[in-house]
Length: 123
Image (tube, rainbow, N blue to C red; front, side, top):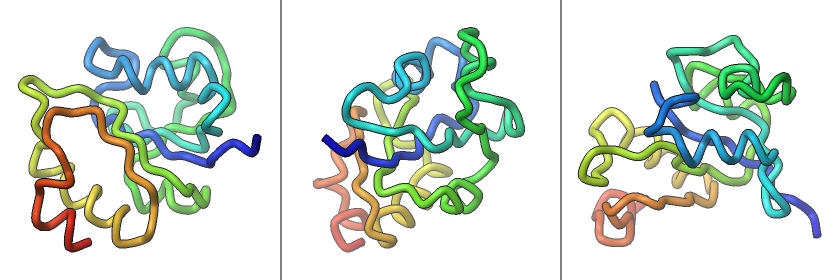
């Protein structure tokens, strides 16, 4: 099976408790389904994601923005951070909409369903 190139979106959460999805994707190198090509987290941009998580170098760059992550040609956008209440913060929404507009498959485990968000559905 060919793994899907994915960017993990975890602003200010990588290596923290709220970044549990991102952390696991880095630890397990995306598993059988994904090839993690970058993690978006401006708080630790420029570092290796594995080192941030504490498992050593994984050759997964941490970048400061979605625009920077797009240079790695992802096909998927994975929301890798949890939020209190499971909502999508306003600052994240523009990046999620952009990912949808660019044709990336968006994986969202939050309680905010993108299929019920008019802007996301339109994108």
